[in-house]
Amino acid sequence: MKYKKMTYGFTHEIEDSVLTASEREASRMSFDFDHKWLMIFWIGSMIIVGILIFRSFYISVVKGDYYTFVASGNSVREVPIIAPRGKIYDTNGKILADNIPSRSIIVLPHLLSDQKHEREVVAKKLAEILGLDLVRVQTIIETAYVSGDTVLIEENITHEQALTFFSHESDLVGIQIQQTAIRDYKKGEKFAHIIGYEGLIKKEEYEKQEGYLLTDRIGKTGIEYEYEKYLHGKHGAEKVLVDSRGNRVKELMDDAPHNGFEVHLNIDADLQEFLYDRLLKELDRAESRRATAVIIDPRDGAVRALVSLPSYDNNKFAKGIDSETYSSWITDPDQPLFNRVVSGTYAPGSTVKPVMGIATLGENIISADHQIEGAGGLQLGSFFFGDWKIHGFTDLRKAIAVSSDVYFYTVGGGYGDITGLGIEKMKQYMERFGYGKKTGIDLPGEVSGIYPNKKWKEDVIGERWYIGNTYHASIGQGYILATALQVANSIVPIANGGTLYVPHIVSYITNTLTGERITINPEQITDNIAPLPDIKIIQEGMRQTVTEGTATMLNALDNAIAGKTGTAQFGGEEKVHSWFVSYAPYDNPEMVMAIMVENQTGELSSTTVPVAHDVYKWYFGGRTDDVFAEESLSNNQ
View (cartoon, one colour):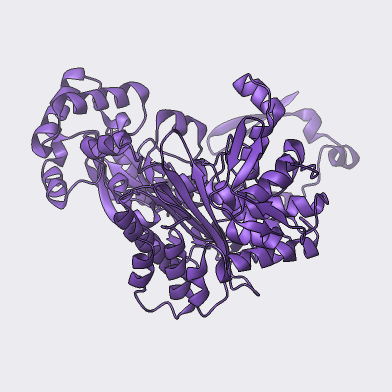
């Protein structure tokens, strides 16, 4: 049976079983309700509602403008903020490569119109107002549109061009001015072969690198190339709200760029400049344009100066080199872009004799005091191997001092009852001192040179090896080719008593963001290149070169100098390459210097010893006077 009950105008039917249920049955129809779950449910609901309210407020109020503009066909543009390259300093903190503000015009392909005729209108307008070539501008814009890459149209524009651009910016959809920087190389020509230069990144370079734009510049030569990964900074981004035509509407939060690391060199800028100027002056006097010089600290292998002449102004590349200038450089027979110190190979001439002396003692060919008569040459069958003069009897020390060819013919190839080293032993010792292989300097373009032997001649020339080839190699002639850097570095272990280093340009690198210093520690190739008593004998011979040999001009200096002159014939002409390698002070060396002037006439390094004289006089004389020894010059004319 059912009963009806009226409640607020509604009729409810109630089962009679409910009405007639006993107390015990009624208790079974009831359930317990824990109020804490209701509280948890209520709090959770409030949190969710709060989040929804906050999100609604953020979207409608905080980001309202943003979403309104996006909904209207507008967008957020991320414009790269170009990170300046790291600066380059000399060993005393003098800046050698700086940055100066610049502006470039670039294409932002995502903002270009999809209609070709509209892109052509933009190209025409841009070419017209800035005086650019229309076909070139059109080509660049179309390339950017197809590839989707940001592309450079014009770099280093003038202030007037920038103002003109801004006055027409609304008509140049997809085109923008980018704030950037270009290199400012201090006294560019004097440091160009060390610092190198940067240039616009090529497509193939871009594809191999991360963190670069197609509008970026990248190191091409020198330190700029070798330390690119440190010098190149990390770009930031300027976030801007723009309308459908690319006009800026609102500045948003930026991502700051990080500058490239600072690179500190071992190069002594003042020494570099003096050596450059003095060598250039000598070339004017000698009517030549080609020369090379390098100075190495024998205490750790640090390169203090490096000069290659003729040179070039690397600022031309930084500011956008014109085709006429570039063409004149690459067609110049004297090759100003060519780094002779690391890439030029020459017969080293008599500068090999100190190492030949080490080999002679090391293989017990003869004792240091054994005398060999130099009567002007050696007669071997129908062949005569001449000396540059008659020296009489010479021991090893004197043979180095007066540069006796007969002595070194004999200990190298053998003569009479002296067996001689032979080319294979000679090659073994010369390679130990760095000939025939790269030194490992931190500059690009280094070559190995050549130190030949029998197999090399058979493989390369297609001829057998003759005793005359060994004689020529004994005095640094024939097929031997070496760089000025190799010649200088071969003297380093003689100067310091036995340690050969990898020569290095960079001293340390500084992270501009954290201040962390990355030190380039000296790298030893060997610290026991030869027995110290043998090295001491060679040192004495090189000292005698200055006191009573072929470089007595240096004996008047306050500091004791040791050295070795050299002349190397080449080609079929009556000209030679003039060499002088030396170190100072004799008892506690701070510098090893090699100088070579190409295409000289006359005897015995007449153009290189005066240069060394003036460099040592300046360096050890307070580094303040403009020391160009006119007396030195007149004595060697």
